[in-house]
Each structure stands twice: as C-alpha cells, then as structure tokens.
Image 1 (cartoon, rainbow, N blue to C red):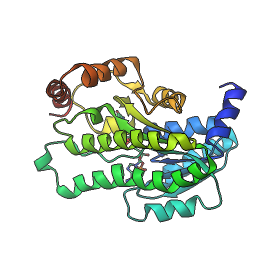
Image 2 (image 1 turned 90 degrees about the vertical axis):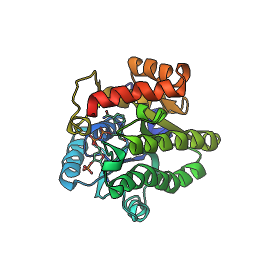
Image 3 (image 1 turned 180 degrees about the vertical axis):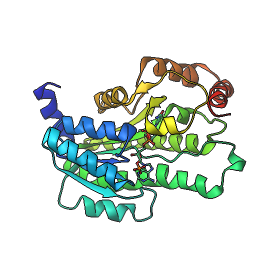
Image 4 (image 1 turned 90 degrees about the horizontal axis):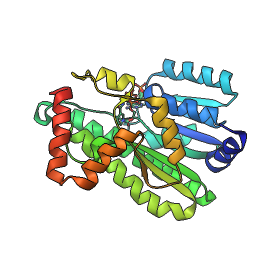
Amino acid sequence: MDPGARRSFQQRYGPWALVAGASAGLGEAFARALARRGLHLLLLARRAEALQALATDLRARHGVQVRVEAADVGGADLGERVARLAAGVEVGLLVYNAAHSVIGPFLDNALEAQLRVIDVNCRGPLTLAHLLGRPMAQRGRGGLILMTSLAGSQGGPLLASYAASKAFNLVLAEGLWAELGGRGVDVLACRAGATRTPGYVSSQPKKSIRLMEATDVVEQTLSALGRGPSVVPGALNRLAAFLLVRLFPKRAAIRVMGRATRQLYG
Ligand SMILES: NC(=O)c1ccc[n+]([C@@H]2O[C@H](COP(=O)([O-])OP(=O)(O)OC[C@H]3O[C@@H](n4cnc5c(N)ncnc54)[C@H](OP(=O)(O)O)[C@@H]3O)[C@@H](O)[C@H]2O)c1
C-alpha cells in the first residue's frame, strides 16, 4: 500500500480499530490488514492464547499497539467490556466479524443454540455499532464494517437462523449507511461468499467448492469502505448475487441456494 493511501486510511479510520472475532479466519485477516495500514488494535475473541500470539506478532511486525480481550461477544456484558477495553482510546473503525452458525434441520437443533445465533450475530453488532458509532458521529469520521454473507440475501434450508441473522446485518448496515453517512461515518456490509477459514473447514462441507482466500475478501472489503452500503467480494460471487437478488424470482433464489446448501450439508 502506498504511503499516501496508508496515511489517509489512518486519518479516516484511525488511530484505533476494534475487531470482534479476531483470533482466526477473516477476523485475523482483518487484524493483519489493519495493522499493515498502521492502525492500533483492540482484538476480541474467546481464545486468549490465539489472541495473545496474534498481538505479539502484529506488534513486532508493524509496531502498532494491540490490546486483547478474551470475551464471548454473545455475552450480555459485551458493551461494558468493550467500553472498558476502549477506555482512553479513539476507536475509528469497528469490524464485527464474529458469528455463530447452526447448521442442520431447524427442528433438530436445540432452541438455545439458535437463540445464541441472535446474541452473537445480531445483538453483538447492534451493541457495538451503537457504542462506538456515537463517538464516531460526534467526531465526524469513522467506519463500521459488519460481516454478512451471500446466505443473508434469501432464506435457505439447513441454515435458516444463520441466514436470517446475516440478513439482519445486511439491513442494519444499509440503514446505518443511510443514517450515519451524512455524519462522516462510513458503514459497509461485507456479503462474503464461501471463504477458506477454520470456521468454514470445521463446518465439514460434503462437497468441495471454489473458495476465496480470506486476505482477498478483506482487501476488497477495505477498498469498498466509503463507496456504498455493501460489497460482494469476488467476481463469481458478484455474479451469483446479481442472479439471486436481481434476476431470479424469490422462490427460485431460495430453491437454488437450498440445492447448494443441501449438497454441502444435507
Ligand atoms: N468462511 C466463510 O465461508 C464465510 C462466508 C460468508 C460469511 N462469512 C462470515 O465471515 C465471518 C467470519 O467467518 P470465518 O469463517 O472467518 O469464521 P471462523 O473461522 O469461525 O472465525 C470466527 C472468529 O470469530 C470468533 N468468535 C466466534 N464466536 C465468538 C464469540 N461468541 N465470541 C467471541 N469471538 C467469537 C472466533 O474466535 P474464538 O473461537 O477464539 O472465539 C474467530 O476468531 C462471520 O461473520 C461469517 O458469518 C464467512
């Protein structure tokens, strides 16, 4: 990244960024990409050791400050914990990346597990967007990135509650984009497609499909910040999104996504 672009990114979204769900996969890739741009980091995830190892590496490589917090972002105390972690620093960018997914027939999965989808995937981003968005709007600059998914553009079997939670993030980001854009805060939903991450691999898909690399998803997302309410990283994913959302009637989109999901997890 050229020094001018790095400096303007820091001025717009620095000096600190918070990544919720930063210990692995796309969240780790966001943390690395933001440290490369010179932002200091607040990193949250449940696994303290993984966070500490990442923090040590980022401090050594990029000379940035890193604070970590081993926390469950689905917890009711999320706002208080983040307020404590962020005390005394100016957070100019939030990346809400953590997600809980429940795969399988809706009626066979425990209700508690599916309610946790709401805590981690909906309550968490709403809480942090509210907590961190206010000082950003007061300063007249900042950014909020919410990770959503192509799965959130229509309902789908075997991951109905996860897909619904991703739709929540997409619509939340679109609304905040419209509301906060005029106050200098860029809001973006990243509608990612299948990406090579520990989370994807551990979901044990039955069929191998083309995956994007996490670093590509992250770079395309950061480039899109400030340019519109949502981004679909990857040309093939953009084509799929165009067909599913703009071209196909809703029933057909649900059927097509459903077929793909059943091939992976049925
Ligand atoms: N990979 C894909 O194919 C794909 C496709 C579309 C959208 N997405 C979205 O992209 C985001 C990241 O996905 P990923 O595949 O990178 O996931 P991942 O490999 O499972 O990593 C998830 C990260 O979030 C953290 N996390 C999960 N639950 C948490 C909780 N309750 N509290 C705190 N931290 C938590 C995990 O750390 P700990 O385990 O240490 O807590 C980890 O750092 C998600 O929002 C997902 O919906 C992914």
